[in-house]
Image 1 (cartoon, helix red, strand yellow):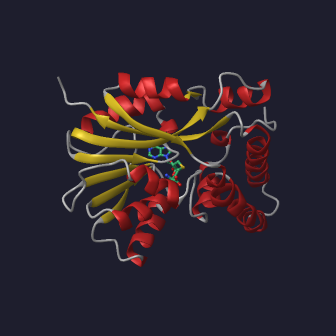
Image 2: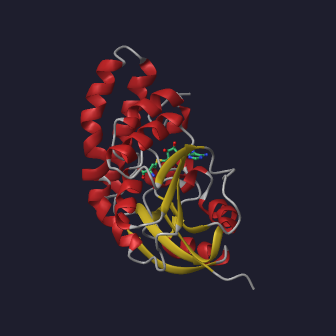
Length: 260
Ligand code: SAH
């Protein structure tokens, strides 16, 4: 049954790709917050191996690439995003050390203990935060870092409308202390966490979508699924406006604890 709570994954995948590929980012975030998270990561150099998992078209990857000297592999399930990612890397002259590949975060193509840093903004929810932290850990060197953003409750209690929305969309959403405890239990030292400020959702995510929605609706005039997708995105933006005191995206940064 379709209603206003239709989940994004019910929409046609190619429509979703088309909708998001014209945007610079496919999730909330900002260059300033990417750099803030990066400021907690130590020991990177020209030899470093970095993976950006669920990189989308690479908005945050290119920001990272301009501030680190090592090699970055962006990985995303959707080849259309990866095409755009690689074009962006070439346009910025970064293609000698920044490469996008398509693949699944459930089956990463890296060697054990190959990576110095795993990055993932707005994407780990696709595998689940806990499972992602546990399964990706083996690809990190001892002392390597992980930096992810994850939907989190900011308060112990919240109005039922927003609670229900998230229970349908991503029941693994939890409070910040619980997310940090999960990181520790998964074998990382929790190094830092901070809440993404409101402009990461508005100026960098929902506001650019307004223009894209007009282009998209013209392109798919009369397509019911396309209209539903736009309605869903608008609904999500309205919910954020109403309930932003109760939830947000939080950056969690951890350091792989040496194997004992
Ligand atoms: N990191 C980007 C994109 C976030 S949107 C940004 O912050 O802008 C989430 C991304 O995860 C999408 O690009 C989606 O294609 C990707 N994704 C979803 N499931 C995936 C999977 N199983 N493996 C790899 N990527 C996946």
